[in-house]
Image (cartoon, rainbow, N blue to C red):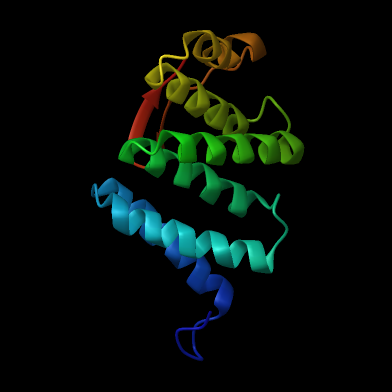
Length: 143
């Protein structure tokens, strides 16, 4: 994917991802979804499926789907991102825990409370302390 000969393919893909973040921050979920999907397709072609940029895009698509009420699609994205992140970074990495937490929140939205509780305790089990930080327009304060 090349917009013009002056912009390398990788830069265009990263800009699509960044545009997805911007659109999500603005509440433009359809546009955000389109940008994340475009970035994901390119990441999957260019890099391995477990590349961290690919996994971040998969997680962000999960957030968009959850915010759109597409809960089955969100669960699929979160599961995929979680499996890859555990493999790439391990179970105690901040990014892995964030996706783990997102999955727990999704299960709570679906009233799957036993699963939600299991996923919601990820931070407690690892002893990780996480301050306020931003995930695609959503601020969390997990401790």
